[in-house]
Length: 398
Ligand SMILES: *Cc1c(COP(=O)(O)O)cnc(C)c1O
Image 1 (cartoon, helix red, strand yellow):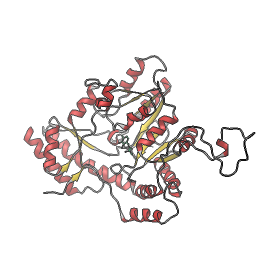
Image 2: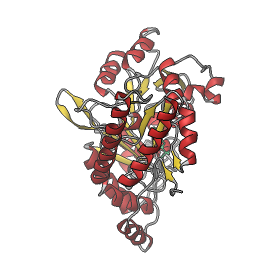
Image 3: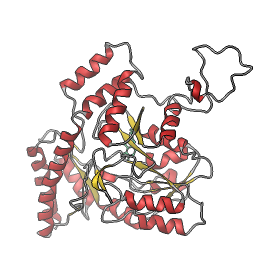
Image 4: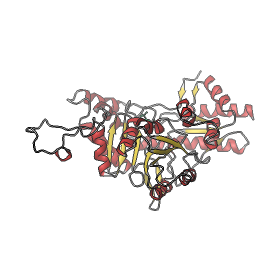
């Protein structure tokens, strides 16, 4: 029997371990010098002006919603095909989540569906959009920016699947997802299954200086010790010494530790090489399954146009008997996975009004999708074993 092959797995090197060890011997365990280093390096990697490290991707989403003023009565649009956190962040702040369907060709939030939703409500009804670069395929940020400008919305790009992915704008395909040029804020996760592992960790990128400063404060309780940020007048106050700090608003403890930052930094130094390997593996899958489909086997894949720089967090095949394929692969120790149960069908969101049939493209995709193993250390032999077994199954159901 083959060793279990998961759908995703982190890769930890001796250099990663040494970097973490160095922090353990340093005076800083939680937020220290490694945080600033990681923020700087990540902003450079992505091409944004600012980056704010936080404790995980979900905390990043929560803080973004807070910084953008989401509260009771705020209405925000997102995709049903994402991890629940992309929607939950709005609920944390008391806002209302609206979903719009995905484009079946890309499985990304469809700007046309979002426009229809916007146009069927009065002006000012919605406040923001949270598009997701699902699987690593960059969303059409140019279209969303146009919608946002036309309807007065902000954008939080959930780029958890897409560090290093590139998108196209008038100036060409060189932009990296989350570079601050189109979305107001973008967020990333350093969960071990994502491109860069930190154990837990997250990052927010932006080109907006005031949002940046606000996020820094929100991640540590809403407290500031910078006199320039104090909101109470000095007059009449008792003497203020170096100890003085203020909490002008409620924040959280969403700090990343230096231990995690050191691991993320070390991983980031290999990010491009790991991304290249993901793309190489995806191309090998593409080759095998395009041929299978051409030979009449019941399998469908999504191949983006060449100018799209897909980051391949996931490699998804779609097939009519998805459960059959999932179960068959388990018997071969291939731990394929389904991404995602549509968020509007989660019992929590059904209680808020979501129901089967709301988003046919998303639901049809969910009925057929399976994410095959894809991670930088997957060997060609392991991948061949996966392909071979997928083919065996597809031939058996043809
Ligand atoms: C992983 C993920 C998150 C949440 O990140 P955590 O670091 O696990 O909190 C949010 N959105 C998407 C699309 C994700 O894949």
